[in-house]
Amino acid sequence: MKDEKRKGARSAKDIPAEVLEQLNSGLIESANLTEWLTIDQNILLKRVLSQMGREHYIAPVSAAIDKLPKKTVNTVNEAIGNTILTLSVSYSDLHIKQALKTHPSDMVRCWATYLTGNNENLSITEKLDQIQFFAADRHFGVREIAWMAVRNSIIQNLEHSISILTLWAAHENENIRRFASESIRPRGVWCAHIEILKKQPELALPVLEQLKSDSSKYVRDSVGNWLNDASKTNPAFVLDICSRWKMESPTKETLYILKKAMRTLDKQA
Image (cartoon, rainbow, N blue to C red; front, side):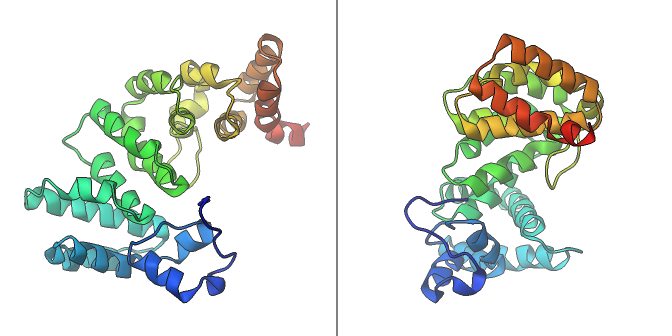
């Protein structure tokens, strides 16, 4: 996670006190992963909800965090988002979602992704339509949480999701193109695996084919990692794809993807 306006500290102990105070008050974005992991979401939660005039949300959201068997940045993030979603429905609070999704704090915007991703009243089409706002976010952390927030819904509606993401793979915004690949990685990171894509990775070809020579390294890394995931359960598919792409698209961009795609198989050779 990189903020071009300033450089973040390399370790938590090196974060200036005034910067940490601003992060925990929701006044600035985290500049890197170190800062992101250092944010105290309990403090941030209380300050942000108070600033929004939602003090009555604080106790139930804090209680949801306390009940977590394992508290990580991601589990706390989701617990906050889910509880705010439930409360917003109970209070018919039509404005909090917009306030969260446009907040200056990247962490607060992360919470907002779950108000879309875990909203059972939305169809998968509506969820993906709304999550695209976060997929294009300027902050890497928000973009990561965005695909995690809709991952389960994508799995439950895989065929339809792939048809939508196929359109995203042609989007002018590289962050949205990257989402199209990253959100359906067979294994992914810190998330549920997509078992059918581990066995039948060819189902994702409508997305992958469009990205095989993408101009963005951000996108190419995702596609290479996608194929490397697939190589662990369906090596024949990946060997075939790599052979075909090398012939059809011998560009430096495609060759970069193929090198990443083959790294596990190369170690086994």
